[in-house]
Amino acid sequence: MEPEKTNKDVMSSDFFAIKADANLKEAFEGIKKMLEKSPHSPGLIVTENEGKYAGVLTLADFMNELRLLYRDACDKAGEKEWMARFFTECDLIGIRKVYEITSGKRLSIKSGDSFEKACELILRKKLDLLAVVDEKSMPVGIITRRHVLTEIGSRMFK
Image 1 (cartoon, rainbow, N blue to C red):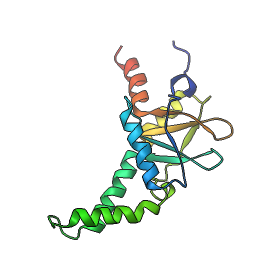
Image 2: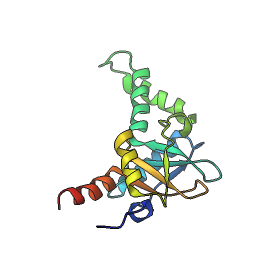
Image 3: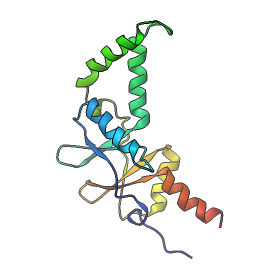
């Protein structure tokens, strides 16, 4: 029987972070960098000014904000001037902050906890990623659905 793995054994310590009070343009730049990396993470770790974990900004959160902007700019589909109104709306939200659009997923897990606990949280809560924090709530890594699939799949399909 294999020894029980901890989150530290499985996590990726290579992740992107952004401050909670960063604006959405800065968030876009962070997401763009994240997407250029292969394999990319499904989101950014959000931190408070002192570096403590504050939540997650997922690609889905950011796309939802774009969807809302599109809705606000376009009363009817197919209108000719929707793109100009859309970018006007985008300029207006440049002052919005990351903490305003995060999905509120503040769940995290300790690096020394069992990886099974992380799997359970990701599967039960349908999370894209889970922040791994140290004893001081500082982010030290992430565990993604990819990690869960790789670990569980390799046990299931030996």
